[in-house]
Length: 108
Image (tube, rainbow, N blue to C red):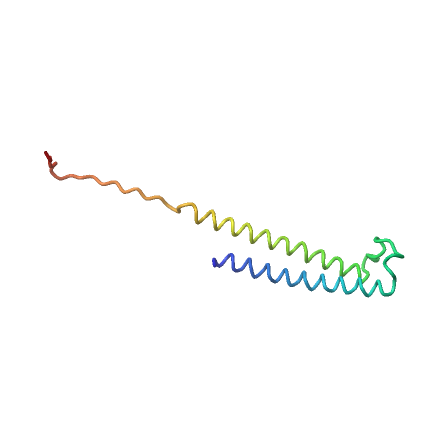
């Protein structure tokens, strides 16, 4: 695999792991919150919490991890496409011109 693709792929894996962890923490916090406050008794907006609250921080960490994961995926796709285009296009075209300066032989 090309070195640039390997780097992009490793970044994508790290971003996926970060997102998975943030998503796990967010879902755990929602379950804990619903144990204290049943979901059907509160509107969706109030589940987010006030700015700076622990539940809001977890939501924002998850959202940031999701954006970073998407950016890493797009960068990997662009790197793959760039490498594919580079492989399709010949790097240089060399023309060889020969000139014969010897006697002309007639076949006949």
